[in-house]
Amino acid sequence: MNLSDLQKYIKIIDTPLDVNLEIPHLAYIEAKKKNPKILMFTNPVEGEKKFDMPVVMNIFANDEVVREIFGKDLEEIALEIENLIKMKPPKTLSEKLKAFGKLFAIKNTIPKSVTSGDCQYHIYEGEAAKLSRLPILKTWELDGGKFITMGQVYTKSLDGSIRNVGMYRLQVYDDKRLGLHWQIHKDSAHLFWEYKKAGLKMPVAVAIGGDPLWTWCATAPMPPGIFEVMLYGFIRGKNPRLVKCVSNDLEVPADADIVIEGWCDPEEMEIEGMFGDHTGYYTLKKPFPVMHVDTITTKKDPVYYATVVGKPPLEDKYMGYATERIFLPLLKTTSPDLIDYAMPENGVFHNLILCKIAPRYPGHSLQIMHSLWGVGQMSFVKHAIFVNEDAPKLRDYEKITEYILNHFNPRNILISKGIVDELDHSSIEELVGGKLGIDATSESDSKKIELLSDEELSEKLKELDESIEEIKQYMTHTKNPICVIKYNKTKKAKEVFERIKILKNHLRIVVFINTPETFNPYMLMWRVTNNIDALRDVWIEDIIGIDGTNKDKNIDDFDREWPPDVDTTKEIIEKLKNLGLIEGISEEELKKYQII
Image 1: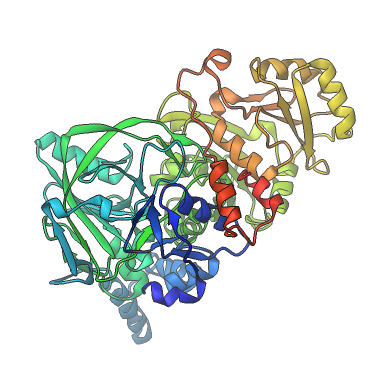
Image 2: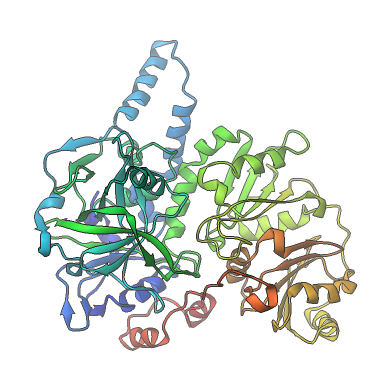
């Protein structure tokens, strides 16, 4: 597949727009529309400088585009994987023929080396290999610089037995150097340490563009040691075609639009960041390895793929959904009584998972919780909620929330400690924090509380604590309503909690915030799941308290630096409005998603 196959989903933007903020801001808004499009910016500029290749953003624009990119329904791919996993020795002729077809699909996963590729039509070496040739974007005002955001980063083990591709952001330091954001838990970081131990330079190649499926495969959570491009071959039904780089021994997709070749010295580290990340917060400055650029190759007429990350929803919603569906069969191999799962995009995936299970005995849900927290990238999940097989569809969020609150029992909460994603900013220590598991598989035995109107409850709460500014009650028809309390944070949320517990006949679950999401449940979920460490911020008493506030060194004794929100630049939004480029989205939606 190439970009021309997606032509009907592409919206062309001919207006000259700057690679610094303007292009990514428009893509950010597009991704939040009800029916987002792929955007092709045909005139990217940087001040007076014009680039000779278009920028393509939001390539995984919506569900229909994802179906086109994968070439079949995601459930069909998942079923094919499940059939392979469950394949038994054939007995009859028909079974043997079916087995042959399955084995042929495996044969297609083996990469095929080719002697030439479209990606090497233009070759720039030495001084000609300049990153400034490419329309690399600066996405957010506080970013440390420009970043490549949709690069497939190819590496291999020291002995060449393991090949890997991942999608990591790459900060541009100058024309010849990139910062490699290899998080400590990722496969490329593990390979990097082999070279560091041996004192040898590590070859690196970055492919951009080509078949969009390459990009998704770079994000796929494959088991360690399995080359992600094999998944490309399985889905496409043909061997992945890879071509050897010009300046090193790595192989990259022959149809890539752009390839950046080079190496990194394991002894060289440089500060990378800040960067407005997919958590909706900035990730802070930290030392990471540096890639030195030797060669850049391109197609005859290349396009530059980029993505924008920040507050949800964005195109990672659709990429993440594909991962969720396709990897369900593999997840079931470690948790066979798992029926289904969902990772809502406003829980930024690793912050919240909903699981439907078929519990067979007491503690079964706890067993599955621990199982999931020990499996690959699932080990980064902070909050997991388990429901029974009679629960509504997991993506019917209103009904599933109602179900959970009617099946919520405080005694069925598990709080433990484990690893968290390196991007997590709220954990009690970097890389390690609280895990929250809720078993909502049985009916709640909670007694109905004496409901008050928001106005009555607000008045009573404000009498108990003058710092409370506003409140909003949600799901009041359930056994366990939620009350959101926004307060002026001059003291710990726990102090307010202690004062209001006297109203236990009117409260069941209380969430504290000091940000503007009180009446915005979509962004409220985003904020709170980001901001809590269950070991510190969840209190199980006569009522349940949750501290979803931004943490403060002086008030909360929070020793780590708390990052700023990822926010749009007002002047850029105004310029795009004046150019008539912001359309198809209401003022209400712009406010909901915190764009204005």
